[in-house]
Image 1 (cartoon, one colour):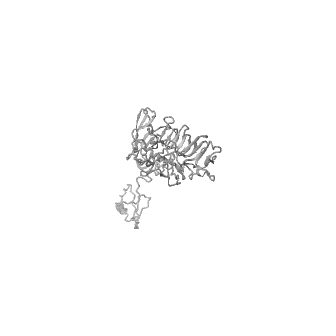
Image 2 (tube, one colour; image 1 turned 90 degrees about the vertical axis):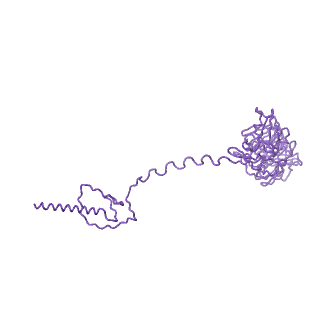
Image 3 (cartoon, one colour; image 1 turned 45 degrees about the vertical axis):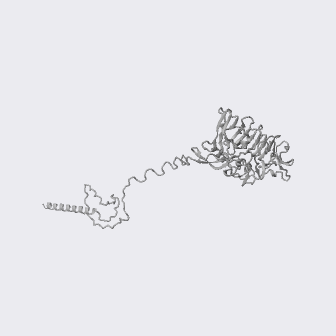
Amino acid sequence: MRATRRTASAYAAARETGPSGSAPKADGIPHSTTSGRRALTIGTAALVAGATLALAPAITAGSADAAFAADGTTFNPFDNAGGFSLYARGDANLQHSEVEGAIAVGGTLTAKQPGGRLPIQHYVTGTADYTAPVIDGAATRVLIGAYSDQSGILDVSGSGIAPNDGYAKLAGGEQAPFFFAYRGGYAQYVVPGGEDQGPSIDAKNQAWDAADPGATFRTAETSVAAYVEQGDAWDQVDGWLAPLADPAAGLANRVEVAHDTDRAVLALQAGVVNVIDYADLFLPGGAYPTAVTYAGPLPAADTPLIIRVPAGTTSVIGMALDGGAGTDAVANSIMWDLSALSGPVTMAPNTGNGQLDGSVYAPHADLTLTFGPLGGQVIAETLTTTGDSGETHAYYFRAELPTVVVTPTGPTTPTEPTAPTEPITPAEPTTPTEPTAPTTPTEQPVVNPVTEQPQPQPEQEPQPQPTPSATPTTPAPAPAGGDLSPTGSDTEALPSTGVDPALPLGIAVGAVTLGALGLLLALRRPAARR
């Protein structure tokens, strides 16, 4: 999986039972075809070896951002090798001297060069303690997508076990210019003229069938990954390996390293996973040690040793890690963790073509290996072995590692607002800021249409009109209760329900005027007589 890496899908096909169910793996024990996780109570290869892996200390630890804890199940990163000792997810170019084990190549395999021969055997000098994987019901030594016409002879004999076993399988089917030919009683996959020098696959355990000579080469599935990648998704495995190597997580014993002249001395803790940073193997002066020894227990199925190589590394120095006890004693309990690496990476021993102990897990790297020999499994994105390399021996990684639960300890909500900081509505108001009506309402006459009903007015007798006075008359005060009738002369008076308050005043003024006129007339009559 790459996170920009691929995310592995659930691989549907099993090796023997087809797309579902369980299938035997290299340790001969059925494993799930959809997940490599196993409960601790389930038997694994470690039990076969007479040991059970204990989980890391039963504590929960972590950093300020997350807490880590083992969840009670285990995984083996090499479940995704599907029981093969060498697995290239893409192409492979194998130029080393011999394979003791089984190889799977998702893309195209180049084996040696024309005229060369790469033997595929069960056992010669390494270990015979493994079982060839089963593909479509047949023990298989070679499972590839295609074979390069720039190859030599791939000699698939499976010798070293009685009886010899192991087929060659072509998940991509037959591809021109190759064809099937009879060769000494067995089937040969060969180009015209390549019978003696290659390129060819000499499938010595697949009897010639004239009716259908390619029948035993074909696979039910059309991809290698469908058979091989039987473990957990690549990114999931990465997510479990990283906390194991994190000192803050507290899930593994951090190996203490001492130095004895030019040697690194490792102090492992029995019964738990032991992790050492690759840089800690180096001597104080920066030189690489000539050997590794142990102050205490050796690596074992229940005491695995993981060498964690940091991201960005492009060259890794491998070495013998047996502590003088021999490869058989430790190789299947050591893992070089290159899961943080991608792109071109080289790995070679510290002493020429020296021994390289342990399995190499580099699923995202284009890995070039030099060794002589290599004791362990290999997973890589693409795999190249150099022509001066020796043999690969099938020391399968046997340890089970604890799966990890990561619990965030920080805030679960974002610290930054998820909504825009700027308002999503216009900054200007959508309605006028000035009121549409006067701030001080003008009092207008109001007539209550319910309580104030028009009343008929009595007809008035015409009255004499007073002579206008030069002195303005002060308006009479409004009656108590407030007469809201309009006062403007050009406004028609509203009906009133009572007597007009100006009537008595008019009568009084008229009476005074008449009295004054009468007095004036009376005074003038005597004057006329004189």
